[in-house]
Amino acid sequence: MLDNNQLLRFTTAGSVDDGKSTLIGRLLYDSKSIFEDQLAAIESTSKKKGHEGVDLALFTDGLRDEREQGITIDVAYRYFTTPKRKFIIADTPGHIQYTRNMVTGASTANVATILIDARHGVIEQTKRHAFIASLLQIPHIIVCVNKMDLVDFSEEVFNKIVAEFEEISSKMLVKDVRYIPMSALLGDNVVNRSGNMPWFQGAPMLHTLETMHISSDINKVDARFPVQTVIRPQNESHRDYRGYAGRVSSGVLRPGDEITVMPSGFTSTIKTINLFEESLEEAHAPMSVSITLEDDIDISRGDMIVRSRNKPEASQDIEVMLCWLNNTSAKPRAKYTIKHTSNDQKAMIKEVVYKIDINTLERVNDSELNMNDICKVKIRTTKPLMIDSYRENRTTGSIILVDDTTNETVAAGMIV
Image (cartoon, rainbow, N blue to C red; front, side):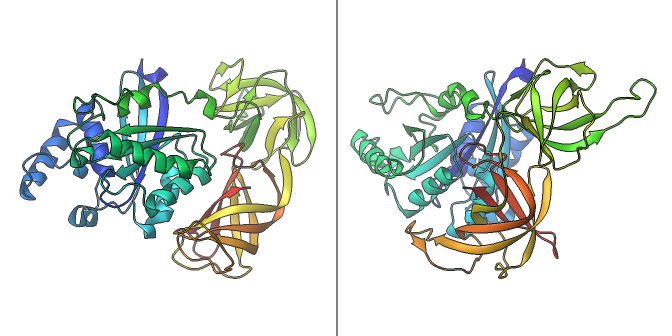
C-alpha cells in the first residue's frame, strides 16, 4: 500500500525562533513517526537541558552548534509516512546569512510552510521567504501563524496577519496560499484540531498536507527526456538492443510518438519504452526508463528527446535568476561548468543585470556577486542548451554552476 503513496516535499521557512523545528518535531511526534530509541535519546537530552517535557526542536536540530545555540543552520531532511501520503520535510534556516541553504531546501518542494510569530506579525524575514518561495515557483504556500497561545488564541490577531500577508502575496506569482493558526509547542492545529480556537473552521496542518492536490504541479504538456546514458548490452538475448536511458523531466511519452532529438534535429518514432524487462504503454515524470527508437540515430548523454511538435528553445545565451552559494565571490568573466539536466557545458557570466536587495526586495545595480546574493545575470555557453523557462518547467528551467578549479557548486539558477 505504501509503495503507491504519493510523495509530497515541503519546506519550512520563517524567522529565528518562530518555531520551525518545534513544528516539525510536533508533526513527527503527534503522527507517531519517531522511533523509540530516538525518542528516548531526545527525552534524555531534554532533561539535561532542564526542560520539563520533550524539547521537540531536537528532532531536527542535528548539528551540535544548532543544539547549543537553539537555531537551525543547515538544511535538515526528515522523512515520514501516513496512511495517505509519504513526506520529505526540509527544515531550512531562518537567518539572513543562510539564504543559500533555504534556496537549496526549497528548490524541489511542492509546498512551502512559512511560519509567522503571532506576537510579531509579518516582518522583513517573512517578506524575504515569501519572495524566495515565489522566485522558486513553489506551487503551494501554507502560512502557519504560530504561538497563538501567547496572544490568547485571538481571532483578531490572526485575521490581521492574514491581511498583511495577502498584501504581499498579491504582488507575487503564488497560486495557492492557505492560513492556519496554531501552537506548535502545545500541538494546536498541527496534527489535531485545536479546542482553543473554535472560530477557525479550516483543517489542521497534517490533514491539509495529506489532502492537498499536487498532481497538477508537474508539467504534463511539454515532453522532455534528457538522455543520461546509452544502453547496449551486447549479449545473446539483447544483441541488437540500443536504448536511451534517463528520467522523464516532464510530459508524457508513448510508443508511436514522433520525436526529435535535440540539438541535432534528427527525427524518429518511439519504438518501445522499457522499465527493466517490462514494456510500458507510457512514461511520465518523474519515471526513469529506457527508450528505443525505430531509427538508428547518433544520440549521446546530454541530448534531449522531445516531441516534434513541442520543442524547447535551443540557446547559448540565457538569462538566469541566480543565487550565489559560494564563500568566494564571482570572478569577472570567469569560466564555469554549467550543468543543465544531463548536459554539461562550459559557460561564462557575461553580465550582472541587477541584484535583489534581500532586505527591501528592490533591484540594485551592483556587479559583484557574494555569498547569498540573488541576482539576474546573462550567461553564455559554449554549446546550445535545450531550455524552458523555470516558470513552465522546474527541471529544464534550472541550472547550477560549478567552479572548474575546486569542483564546488558555486551557484544555482532559474532560467527566465
